[in-house]
Amino acid sequence: MKTHPLILGALAGLAAISTALAAETPAKTDTRVEVTFASPEKFADVRDAYTSSDRGRDGILSQIRDYLVSRADTYVSPGQKLTVTFTDIDLAGDFEPWRGSEGMDVRIVKDIYPPKMDLEFKLTGADGAVLKEGKRQLRDLAFVSKLSINRSDMLRFEKALLDDWLKEDFPRTKSG
Image 1 (cartoon, rainbow, N blue to C red):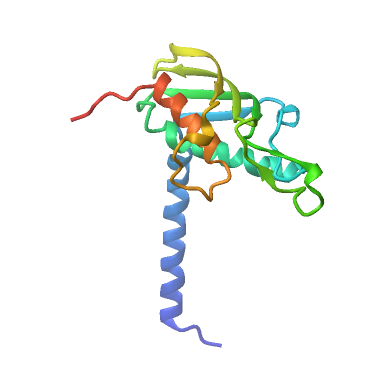
Image 2: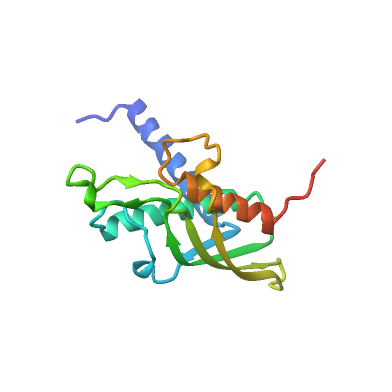
């Protein structure tokens, strides 16, 4: 069986591309923000259904981590490192099992179920010196009345809470 030269050339090109992409991966994973969750199985409410699963909880926490990393990168200067540890999370809304089997796994969002996040953070400079650290209890009792652009995002209230915290604790300086 003879191998066609075009196929060999295409395979060689793909190998070169995949090698180049593999070399870039470490640079992309070098982030200025590190997020951890302390004992997430003990968090007040990080459930995707009335009868929660570890997989559902981990999926929600992964979305929160990814969002915070992407947003905080704009507030943390190059060379700085922000470490955030969540100690408790209570998502907006709750499951109301008395609504019957059809509504048992539907998260009901009312003002009596506000989003809550407790966290500890540390911002360090390039030299490792601590620039800012603390504990925060993030709450928004008026979350229902706020305008939300993405009403289909299940975590929009928690993301807004994180945005408010970043703006308050890490104000951006104007750049020209």
